[in-house]
Image (cartoon, rainbow, N blue to C red; front, side, top):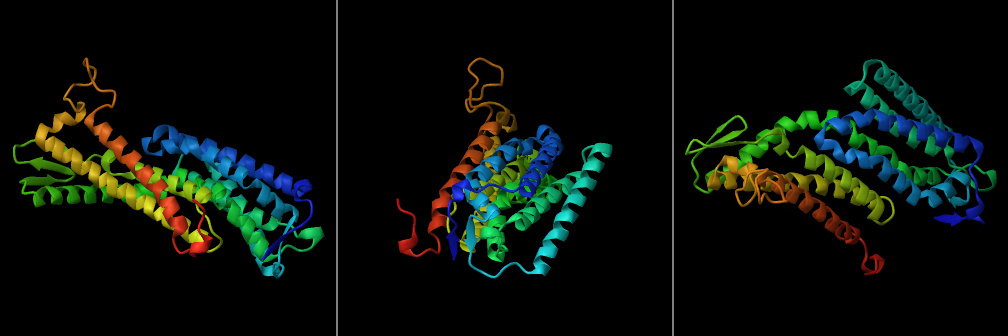
Length: 343
C-alpha cells in the first residue's frame, strides 16, 4: 500500500535529480535529431514527428505523481531497495549512457545508419529507466522502498521506450518482415480470388488475371506503414487511457499493442483484396483514377483521391477507430463489476 507524505505540492527536486532530468532532455533532443532523418525520408514513419510531443505530454500528465516519488512526498510501505538492485541499476545507467555516447559519436562521424540509431534509442531508454529508478527518494530522507522505485519506473516506460518504435522499429522489424508481409498478402488475396472462381496466375508479388491484365502488391501495400503507425497509436492510447494497477494495466497495454498490430494487418489484407477486385472489374489502371474513373488532374477529379489512396486512407482510419474502441473494452476485461469505471 502507499501513503501520501504531507505537503506534496511543495516538494521540490534536489539538484542531482534536476541535473539528471536535464541530461535526459538533452539525450531526447539528440535522439529526435537522429531519428528525424528516418521520419523525413520514410513515408511509413511520418508518425515519428508526433513522438517527441506525445512523450512530453505523457510525462507532463504523470508529472505530479512522478515528482512525489522523486522527492519522497509519496511513500510505499515495503522493504528498502537492496544493494544488489541499486548496483545493477547503476551499472545499467552507466552502460546505457556509454552505448548512447558511442551511438552519438558514430552518428556524427558516419551519418544515419542502423548501428547509431539502435545505440542512441536503446541508450536513451535504458538511461531514462535506470536513472528514474535510482532517483526515487524516501520520505524525510529515508531509503526509498523498492516498490516505490518500480512505480516511478512504470510511469516512465512510455516516455522512454516510445523512441524504440519511431526509429529502431525500422531496422528490427520493418526490414525483417516487409518481404514476408508482401508474400503473405499476395498469397491471401490470390487465395480469396481463387475461392471466388477467378482464374489467376501469381508471379512474385504480381497477380495476373485471365485477360492478361495484372495488379502488383507493391511495398506500399505490405501494411508496414499501418503496422508501425498502429503500434505507436496502441502504445500511446494504452499508456494514457488504460486503467488498473500492476500487473493488470501492463497486461492490458500489451494486449492493446497486439490488437493494434493485428487490426492493421487484417485491414491491410481487406484493403488489398478490395483493390484487386476493383482492378479485376475495371482494369488495373482504374486504381490510379478516382471512383468515378476520372484521371488525376482532370476536371471533376475527386478530392478523396485515387482509388488506391482512398482505400489506404479508409483502412488506416478504420484501424485507428478500432484501436480506440478496444480501450474501454480492455478496461472492463478481468475487472470486478464494482471496480469498473463509471459511464
